[in-house]
Amino acid sequence: MHQRKSKKILIYFFLLVLLGSINNNSINNLKLEKIKNINIFGLEKNDQKILLYNLNNLDLKNIFFINKKYLSNIIESNSLVEEYNVKKKYPNSININIKKTSFIARINKDGKFFLIGNNGKLSDNDNSGIELPYIFGNPDIIKLLKLKKIINQSNIDYSEIKSLYYFKSNRWDLKFKNNILIKLPEKIDNEILNNIINLLKDTKLENKKIIDARIENQIIILDE
Image (cartoon, rainbow, N blue to C red; front, side):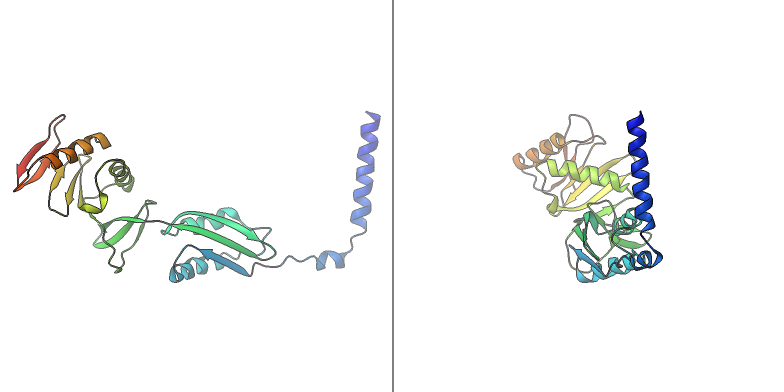
């Protein structure tokens, strides 16, 4: 016990000597350099400028005292960002590496079209000519992402889908570019989708354009 007390006294004495040797001038000269460069990778130039403008408004000050919460909020509020990481580059720069989201569909919200990202966020529609299916109805985006995941796990080629129709009964219809319409049941998985696709491959459809799979264990082929 006596040895522990002696060690504590020595530590306190050392701190007092150290602090006493630091005068006001040396404290005033201890100034941390402000962040001068924010480098953003993974976005187009115009999108970089928008994100950079929002980050500069944050007043990040210096590299040692970055408010990670505020920084993350600004980056994550950008609808194009799916994943990202931030690296400090001493003494006065930070690098932000971004994985840009891929777009999976278009949807009309209050009379305006938006792009739906794989991150579940909506972005302003563009005129780039990117070919995407249209969403009809008003689904929760999470439900669309769940459907997209099931489709990806099946033998359906998502790029061949022209439109997706959502119903309040919580089920979907898929319309393909060849105008075949598949009426899906409320509960679906990749096995159900594969059964439908296999049937289409083995059947001569001719003028039959509707595949009704809403009834369990049944697939009905109908005329237009």
